[in-house]
Image (cartoon, rainbow, N blue to C red; front, side, top):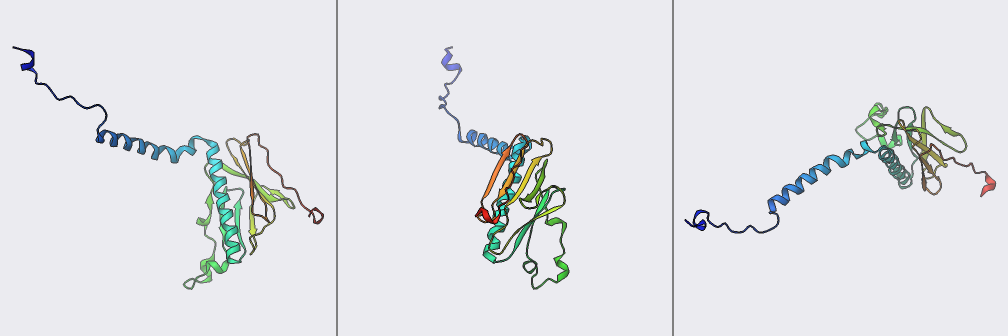
Length: 195
């Protein structure tokens, strides 16, 4: 018998991938990214420090803006010992028609923790200095102004990794100084003659 009779000729398969193969591959890649990217900060310590610093910056900007828009004093509190912070709303903003004064008590769930391994090195201003213990309150007046302030974050496991957030009270501008040697930015007190 001839070989052509034993095996029927199959049509040649076109080169390339099928749509199903491409969809499966893209799905696997997307799932891998969905799992790895949110947990990337667990692998890179600086990312945790940067994440906490940028979140505080966003909230500072929001609180300053709200103080100006509403024409009310607004503030943020930083618990320097427990590595957490919160926004403190004016009492009249907390109270609605269906509440009474007993509902205005501070709740422990108002606090937002810093990322894992990130702690406060301190907070303060040039006049009173930088405190390292207790609760530090940063207050914006009804025009959105505050004194020049400094908030310092660091990694507990690598104390030389420091982020200093210097807030300029009149302009609202924030300067970020990153240090890998543990250096902390210092604010300079301005007297009346400095203007």
